[in-house]
Amino acid sequence: MKKNILSAGICILSALIVFSCSQGDKKEDKEKVAEETIEKETPNLNLAPGTASVKGQVIKMNNSSVPKTCVIKVTNVIGYGEGTPSIAEEDEITVMMPDNILSGSDSDAFLAGNYCSLLIRNIEKAGSDDLGNWICIKVK
Image 1 (cartoon, rainbow, N blue to C red):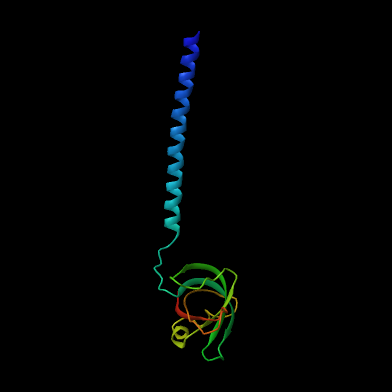
Image 2: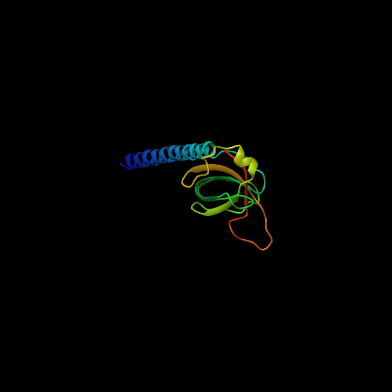
């Protein structure tokens, strides 16, 4: 009788060890797949320091100012270069729009309500912490 109980205990213990080991492998596989998915979904932009890639909706284009400026409501921050001030989704940022950028893009691209994708660079202004310190480098 003692041999049967001992044998049953050994079998149960062996089964627990086998199942616990196999669960660990599955957990590691799931973690590895999750990491690979994140790497595939996160583009390696290699943005220059002080730059950011953003998507947003045009709120207002000011063609009368020098330089021309555009107010963008950020809908998606795609990436940052090193040392770039953070921008949150839903922030409204003012971006200076150089003439060479505007002349090379669709004339309707910056009408209020339209969406755009921009590469912008931070311009440090002494004593200014507002969201108006950006210049457009490229329209995507």
